Amino acid sequence: MKSVVICGSQRYKVEIKKFAERLRKLGVPVVFEPNFDRQRKKMLAATEKTRLLSKSYRDRVPAMVHEHFDRIRKADVCYIYNKNGYLGVNTTLELGFAHGKNMIIYALEPENVKEGGEICRDILFTEIIDKPEDLMLRLA
Image (cartoon, rainbow, N blue to C red):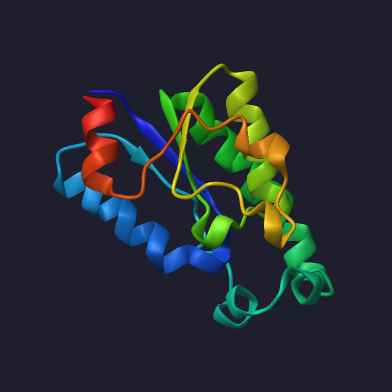
């Protein structure tokens, strides 16, 4: 079975963790997920614009993104958790990195172009898969 790395915004920390746990329960042996544990709860709830006002946040984020690039390097498949079609700047970087590695890239939802999404990201998705059970079948 292929390994998978999940990429997504810290605003969906809880949902991403549940999605990853479900994949593990279904038998996917290697599931890499973002490490949002270093973020303070108030920062998770804040907008990116507000988070960027914090020096400690600005100091931590580059290391977290670089750490996640290592997870992407180790995985066979990339899964973009883009609830409501949302992809932030860091996840967009991760998407581009995965594409540069020629990885298969699945996504939770199509790009939301009507809400300001980028059609250029949408073309990088191999398939839209909204359930862990369906993703697990693609990894087998």
